[in-house]
Image (cartoon, rainbow, N blue to C red; front, top):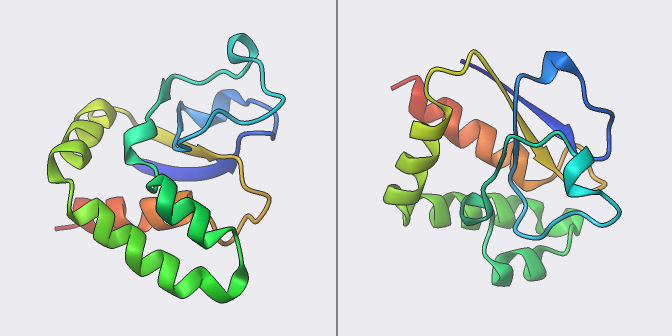
Length: 119
């Protein structure tokens, strides 16, 4: 399975494959009927506490990654259910709303999933 990441505000493309929003909150200004989102998985997103703490501050990025991975490890049932929903998909695009394309939860989630898929 190929897992890509993309900002939800970028135009939809057929090349995206199965599109999954991995934000806890619905992105501002995006109409649900025009978002081309196949799955919105709020539970796989960082907790509200972690999201608020991170506040997309570059200095918090290393600690955010560690804490988010810890959250994912602490909810194996949710991760397993998420992976089951992705099973059989050739291409998956994880969508996020943050402005920072290098430091966001989709980056961490993709690395976490890819590490698990390679085991």
